[in-house]
Image (tube, rainbow, N blue to C red; front, side, top):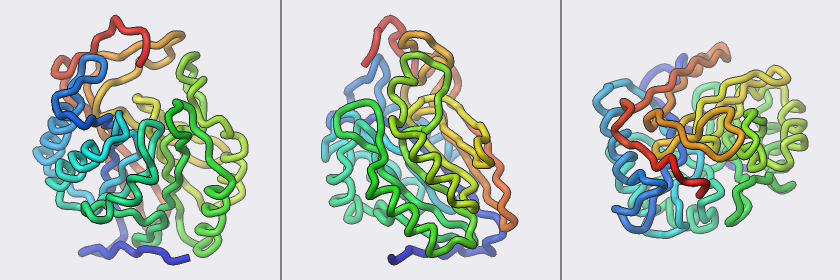
Length: 274
């Protein structure tokens, strides 16, 4: 298996990463999702990131880049995220067209490699998409890819990226849309002792827990937010968000979430689903 190695212009004793997730872009720029113009919220997030002047070595995008599976939405994403002037890597989400993404993103400047080494960290990108349904499933072929990629570099600290969080978040409606073979997935993760982190999107909220000595993290969306611990479908009024992570040479992980101020992108909280 060929691994892409990302060369840094500094000593790789501390790797800085920006995570974006769940932009839900449409073919038409002005289209809204539950009252939020997702292209506008994504643009505002990118502007805030640039204004922060926080450095990062590369960007990971953990799925649901699109809401409507369209080529135009991916073209818009690639054009918009180019302002960050950093390497961009991705995984597909349940609102994405994974095969289309892998076909077109390379020509748009978005990396399509699924195994990347940076310093003494190994990043493995998995697909949990089940086309056109909300829940996820990591196919046996994907688990085999994970094992094979890991076994090539078992000495490296490893991060697995996948859209669907393979853990429950104590929200009745959202927990029906989790990764449906999460036990199989988590058993595979546990069998690889140098996997330090599983990094996800999908749940449109913050999540950061340790399970079987592996850290599981999910991140707020750049569009709409889901209300934590909700019994039925409910939207949160917190602003769109993003996450920075730092990985040290010694295998440590630190992270921080940022959000746009509340009130800029207010969803329609009267809806019962999407």
